[in-house]
Length: 241
Image (cartoon, rainbow, N blue to C red):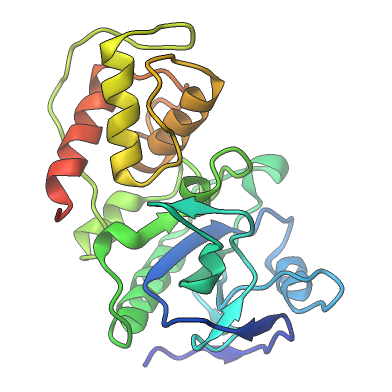
């Protein structure tokens, strides 16, 4: 087992089922100490199972067998209330509000080691290792476009398709037609809450931005260019049906 520092939080309740998902967050606060205090404050009514500091220290807040309060209103593949089935990991970073910055190497190594440790105990598929912005795209941006999802995939945690240059029409807000419908259908099949309509509306742009933050971080603009769509198709081929 990974060595962690006990920092118990009172903010938990019983799980209705074993965990089969991991949700990664950034803390979005000025310091790790501030975030740790909030996650342990009964008045805040938020928590996570783990917090990973920038120097690689791992704090254990809630037992994995218990339901921590980290995902909030959330959705993936038809499931809601994802706190019921997920393990939440808070990764110390000021976030977009307080000076978003790259995640230090020691921190990423610690996150990878923690994922390996957690998955030795629970059956968590690669396709269910997600970001907060994946399960709550209208509300959240974390862990954001600077988080190295490719490093996690290289270590055996999650998927990260690489594609060559993929020219194609750029779909954006206001567009409509079969291409938009197919894009929405693909994002829905992946897990997002985006019923296909054929209309590229603001909800579609929001979900595309969430997808880009995870799987196409070089450009996060909510418009589905050829590379965004190619990465989506490649990802869907990687995931077992």
